Image 1 (cartoon, helix red, strand yellow):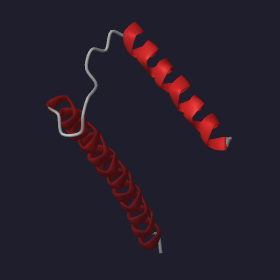
Image 2: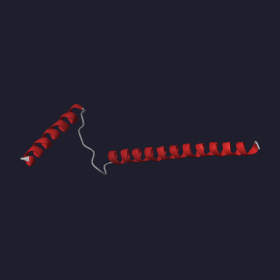
Image 3: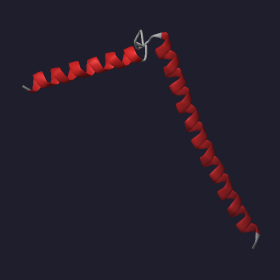
Image 4: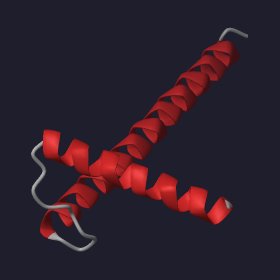
Length: 77
């Protein structure tokens, strides 16, 4: 019984996907390794790299401010 229910759910979801693809006028699905897939993957990888660099930059700037505070506190003596 559970298997039949799962199959019914799968078919319903497939129909929903096909309906959405039709409404969005998607003629061809991307496949792993296709040019569009690879271009999008490169864009995602680049964004992740840039986010990591920005986070690192923020940490370095914060560290430099802390060093500046320590240095200023040491010169007041």
